[in-house]
Amino acid sequence: MHDTQQLPLTGAQAGIWFAQQLDPDNPIYNTGEYVEINGAIDVNIFKTALERVLTEAASLHARFEEGADGPKQIINPPFEAAIDVIDVSSEADPKQAALRLMQTDLAEPVDMAAGPLFRDILIQAGPERFFWYQRIHHIAIDGYGFSLLARRTAQMYTAIREGRPDNGRSFGSLEDLVKEDQEYRASDQFLKDREFWMEKFADEPDVVSLAERAPRTSTRFRRSTAYLSETALQHVKAIPNWHEAVTAAAAVYVHRMTNAGDIVLGLPMMGRIGSISLNIPSMVMNLLPLRLSLRPDMNFHEAVSQVAKEIRNIRRHQKYRHEDMRRDLKLLGDNRRLFGPQVNVMPFDYALDFAGARGTVHNLSAGPVDDLSINVYDRADGSGMRVDFDANPEVYSAEDIENHQKRFLLLLESAVKDQTQKIGTLNLLLESERLRVLDSWNDTRKAEKQKSLPELFYEQAVKTPDRPAIITENEELSYAELNKRANQLAGMLKEKGLGPEQFAALLLPRSQELAVSMLAVLKTGAAYLPLDPDFPSERITYMLKDAQPACLITTMELSGRMPEDSDAKRIILDDPDTVKTVAAQNADCPAQAECSPLHPAYIIYTSGSTGKPKG
Image (cartoon, rainbow, N blue to C red; front, side, top):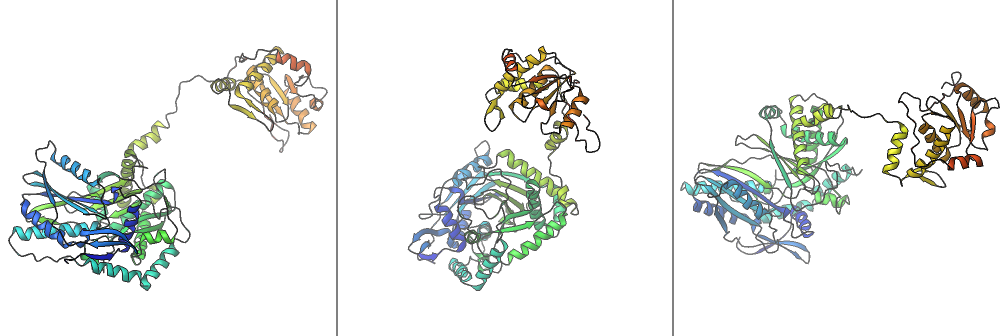
C-alpha cells in the first residue's frame, strides 16, 4: 500500500475516538510497554528491523478526521519512523532514568488528526542492557497488537543479525479488518448479540465499586505491583481453568468487601479467535460485562464454575461492543457505568529472542482506568505471576490500592488452597487489621472518673449552650436555658429537703416541664418516679403508696389526681408562689448534690400484667 487511503472506523475505534473528543488533551488513551533486553544488541540492526515492522503495520500510520458522514481514518503511505536512541548508562540509576523518560512521554497528548500515533525509543542502560519503549494511541492498537509488533521485530532482528532471509509472516490488511467489522455490524448475528445483552441487563443492575465515590475518567492512573507467592502459584496452576479461578477470586473479593450479591465485572475479550485480526496489529479488544450472583454460603469451587460457565456464555456474543451496550441501555454521561472493577488475566505471553538476547516485556499503560483494573500476567521469564492493581487516583489513595491488593492476594491464596471453603469464610484481614479488630478495638480499659448524669449534662451544656436541647410543637429550649431552669427548680427542692436516697414523683404530661423536673431531681441527688397522667387513678395511688416519694411535682390541673391520704409534699409548678420561689433561686450554680453511682436515679414500674406492678 503506497497511496493514501480512507477507511471508516471499526466499532472498537469509534468508541475510543468519541471518548477522546470529550477531552482531546487527555493522554489517558496512550498505551505503552517496554521490552527489557539483556544482552549485546546491534543498535543499527535493531533500528532497521523495527523500521521495517512499523512500515508493515498500517494502523500506526493512520490519522483521524471528522467528515460529513462522521469520523474517518486516513491511512498515510508508510514513512520512515524516527526511532530515537538515548543513552542513560551514565546516570546513577539507569533504569529509573529510563522509566522517567518513558513516563514523561506517556503523559504527552496525541493529536489524532495530525499524528503520528506512535513513538519508539531504544534506551541504552549499559553495554548489554537496553529498554525498547513503545507508546501507541489506543485507537491504533490493543495489548495483543503490541505482542504482534514485538514478536515480529524480534524475528526480523534475528534474521538480519544472522544474515538469513526473513521467513516471517507479514501483517494482514487493515482494509480487510474494517470490512469484516462492517459485515458483522450488518449481519443477523449482530442483532442476535444485541438481543442477548439487552435481555441480560433488562433489570438494570446496580454497578458495585470498591470506591467510596463515583469514579470519573482521569488523566492518569495509580499502579501497585505485587507477585503471587511461590506456594500460591503452585496452587493456582494446579487448577485446570486457573484463569477463571483468578477472575472468580476478584468477584468474590468485591462481593465480600461490598456485601453485594449481584456483581458485574469488566472482562477484556481479545476478540480475535476465528478472525483475520489474529495477525493485524490494531484495536480489536472489547470490554464485556461479566455478571455473577454470589452468596456467602457458596464454596469457591462453585464460584469458579459459575465464572467459567458465564464466560463461555458471553464469549459467543463477544463481538457486540460495550459502547453499543451503554448506548442501548441508556448508560450515557458521567458515572453511568456498565460494570465495576475490571479483571484482565493476560492469555498470551511474550517469548522474545533478539538473536540470543532475552527480551522481557513490561506494561506501562493499557489505557483508561475509570475505577479499578486487576491485571494478572503469567510471564515465562521466571518472575512468577505478577498482579498489577491500576486505580483511578481520583477515588483511590495509594494506601487504598495497596491494601486492596494485599487483601485480594490473601483471599486468592486462601481460596485456591482449598476450593471447598465457603466464600463467606475466606480470609480478608491483613495482620495489622486483625490486630486492630481483636486487640486495639477490644482494649476498652480506661482510667476515668465515674460521672453522674447531672455532671455529664452540665458538661454538654457548657460545650453547646445554644444548641436545642428540647424541641416541642410550640417552642424549643437550648441547653443553657434547660440548665438554668433545672438549677433553679433543684435549688427549691433542696431547700425542701430533697436529696440522695429519696424519690420525687412527677405527675406531669410529656412537656418541657417534665424534662426540667427530671433533671432538677437528678441535680439534688434524688431519684424520680414518672407517673403518666393517663394512668388509671388506682394505679397512680398504688405506685405512690408503694414508692413512698418525698414529694410530688405536678400542676394545678393534675393535682386532683393525687390520693387524699398521700403524705408526699405537693409542689405545684404553676402555682404563683412556687413560680416566685423558683425564680429567686441561683440559676448559675450547677446545684448538684454529692452522690454515689450506687444511689438510685429513677424508679420505673412494670405494667402489672402478671400481677401487681413492681418498681
